[in-house]
Length: 102
Image (cartoon, rainbow, N blue to C red):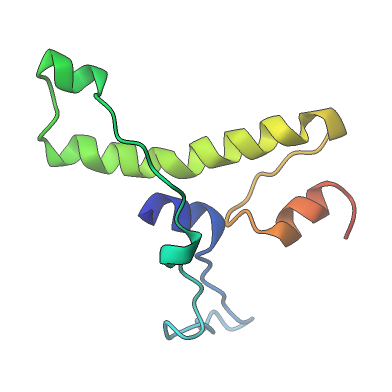
């Protein structure tokens, strides 16, 4: 869920002087349980081979890939409209801007 939060919700906002403007969790949108999709857990190929399943480094790499997976899925959906999203978080406003609706 942490990777999805970075892709779709979490956004640090700064003013012109470089001061962080959303300094508390009340001002910073993070996904909660209601936004969490159903997740089916199944066997992983590398777990079956017995390699890398317990190393922290592998876990961090997988976590960092999630925003890219979400962005690729959104861009695949936007392909028929000749639109592309290149920034995150990928909010509805960002998608509508890419579509030229805003």
